[in-house]
Length: 104
Length: 142
Ligand SMILES: Nc1ncnc2c1ncn2[C@@H]1O[C@H](COP(=O)(O)OP(=O)(O)O)[C@@H](O)[C@H]1O
Ligand SMILES: [Mg+2]
Image (cartoon, rainbow over all chains, first blue to last red; front, side, top):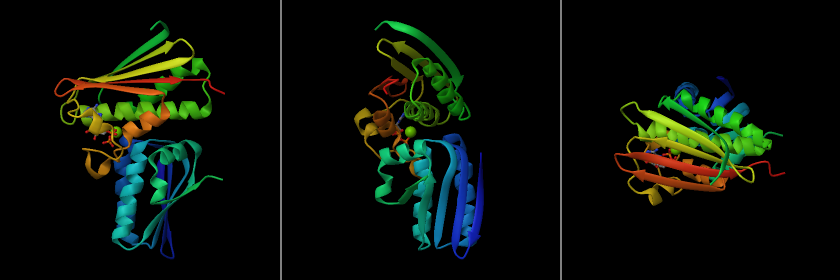
């Protein structure tokens, strides 16, 4: 379980791993907000490759990041979404407003 | 309905019990030989119900949560998640996708996920008395 940030040429890549649930979400959101504040990127990429479980707390996390990025004129991309997390995102129809790419 | 096996968990409404509860239910469900997708869906549905009890059931005071699992005939798993907390004023409204009283930390998609990932969701609640969420899901469908 962890969150790794990397910034390059206006792109902030945030790799989230482990279980994303309510217990975990607040800390992760604070880390994301702090990194966005510090780097003010054009693009924020949430890389979910190593997420082993996600529930609707993950949806709230993505939506909040999306709103924050909108405020600074940037956008959020969600990438490498594993099967279980993808089913949760599909059930919520969040892909209508945010770019979501499955793990290939 | 006749039960073939059952288990009951009781724990305080602490957020670090959310992962314990969904994993324990998944372990119990393993005897029904579920598919990987079914198990993931079950864990998500249980996580939603238990998180709701923690977050909305007991917003201030600490209370207890009970999770009871039963195996019914035809490979159906039943999960009951119960709290004795704040209760829900308007159940119809609470079930609406994206409805939340939790602010920007919540997505309001909990009941939607429970509904899409199980075969049936029944909610009983009384303001000031508590909430019971009963879910049923047929497992091992290949
Ligand atoms: N156990 C509960 N006790 C009291 N209120 C609840 C409970 N479960 C759900 N609710 C109410 O129903 C609403 C919708 O729940 P849900 O769909 O899980 O969304 P979220 O948890 O993101 O708010 C909650 O915001 C809350 O007002
Ligand atoms: Mg919820």
